[in-house]
Image 1: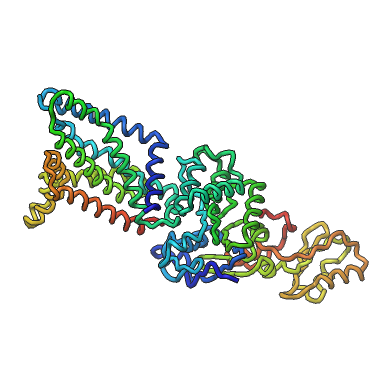
Image 2: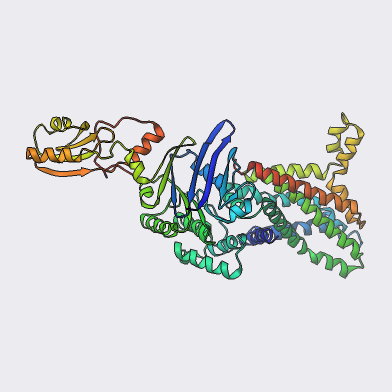
Length: 322
Length: 244
């Protein structure tokens, strides 16, 4: 696969503050890389360095084979960038703003018209094309920024929180848009919405305090969770908790109330069959049995804050706010 | 070049997207009129020239030009659009130059709107048109000098009011650097050569030389190098301060 974005040993200091510290990764065509991390972790700073806005303190970035420091214009030409907060010129209309972006990217008249038309259609901007951008809603402003980033059909897309401020329908639409473009582009998105990672990313980096603390596919990251292969069972039987805790491969059992238990395996073990077999053998009336793939939010919390403990009383999956 | 023109066109259009352009031009014309006819005693002098008109330009520009220049970079930094602008495949020099030239073109438009003044003297008497052309050229060059200072200062702050105030102060110092108000700060300790250099930096002296109809290359070179120096400072400052 063709490596479109290469980042090596990237670091950025702001005075005494180390915003990004020795970050290395690469993104190939066809990949959607998710940047995950708490606010202030260095996601946006990394993006600003990849797009050539900020000069790194150390390290190098190459986009489409062009070093961002030495061949800045060629590298920038290959990028479509949605900066944090989707800034735009408020006094312009989307139509004139997009025309400006197209001209600045050196598109000819016909190519500009075609590109703008396609981008406007993709993000559904038709209704507001002639209104000043500063009068638009947050969702429309974000879509203007997106349209600006994709109108020249760049091989590399860098999107800083592309779905921030969108309603659920618009989020869905933007995710589909990203998935649709993923095949022939290298894309980086940053987000703090964990469900987005599973929905659009082929790979994700968890960043905390300027460092990459985890790197893998969404499934691999989920597998790092304590909930990976954990079993949730709801039975109406006396002494179920003790019986479950005695099964081979079970690390601990947490009672969730109303006859529901969360059964954690020891690392790497699979306990589904043991739990199901035991229930069958004992003739338990099993109302519910769920095997979890893992919880990204738990991995995220553990990786970014170092919180180790699984709390004693646990909310059932899906009840926890995303 | 074409990328610079793209920035130039966007910037110039943005003046006219907002009331700024119209408010500025109307106030500029109003004030030049008042100053020329009342303070400058345009009719009473009995001379067919535009001397009273041009003599107030340095003082008008001192407040009006920083008002245009203050937004050039401060606004970009405040709204975050600077990140967009500088990640487009446009060089920083093109962006700085395009913005400056758009602001300069705008002041040229405002200045051009004073043409009835010229028609008036032409109607009333027989003025030396060469001197008037020189006056307009000098005025435009001086506005460029103020603008370049303002553009550089505006890249220092996200706050347009701060940019405005600092620009006015810096422009004031350059305007009157030939006068005791500035020179007295140097005569006490600096050698005469330094004092002479400071004095030679005065906008006023060079502007008055040009408006007298003497198109000395040194005066033109002074303004052009002033603009060049401040635009270079602008470039360095934007690069250093863009992320702050």
